[in-house]
Image (cartoon, rainbow, N blue to C red; front, side, top):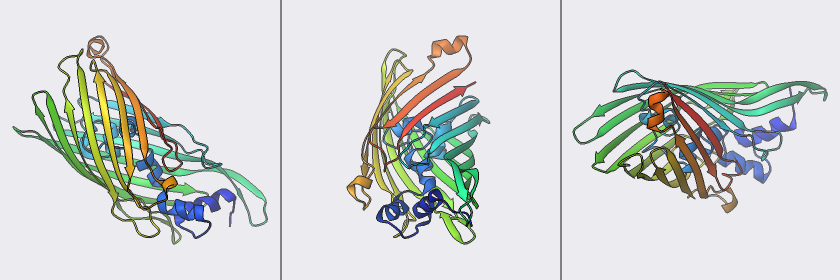
Length: 341
């Protein structure tokens, strides 16, 4: 049987083994899939606006919060990066995600995404204490998403579905499980003002197990939120987006993560291609204050101006999102690039 301090530390955190107080706190608050899916999703705009997105987020990154937001008008590819953190010793926890999206027609969209949360290389030892080889460890997910739009005289309905394949791998432990996200959204425009409402539930499916051990119990998260915005009249005018979102886990128990959270965000749009964002998080979970997720978030964004797109038929989107406070001791610092052809 292979042993090392990293593996013991990791198992305390994600399997719920009873041990020191800090390890028990980890087991109740940070399943590893939640690090990538909830605490640090591959969505710079959602991070900047207080971990929100269910009611307003569109494009490939919308599947982080609500697959009904998968709305594209051109073939699109995306990449996002979350830098490594040194908060957990040998675990660097850097994360990358790649996405491809395609509008099949005006009403149907499809998207593919892959992300990998990298724990780094682990040095293992045999029962005699002899050093073995270094092995990579982490948790990764492949997903396919689809959304359909229904236009009415009063607004627009959208329904989305994401089928995911989650894989947890560390040393001799390797577990895989299919999961499902689904959501819906309604939005409407009224002259210069628009509003939308969205609801979604994520990670419907089975636990990740290996030889009888539960390696991961993904948080089944229910999200609901509203967003209101002011449409920019021209490229030289200002736009505005305000949002509020409530999130709650529906499968937590005494040993499982409890997630009871509300986020708020405000985005200012300058000249149609520059964006300034700020948000705030409220944590209602029954946790110690130093374990709560609360505080400010912020970010900036840039889209290629429409005048430039006439000359170069490629639209570029650059976004950065940051949590001022470390989310349960995990750095939230997300950079994304999106290209539309």
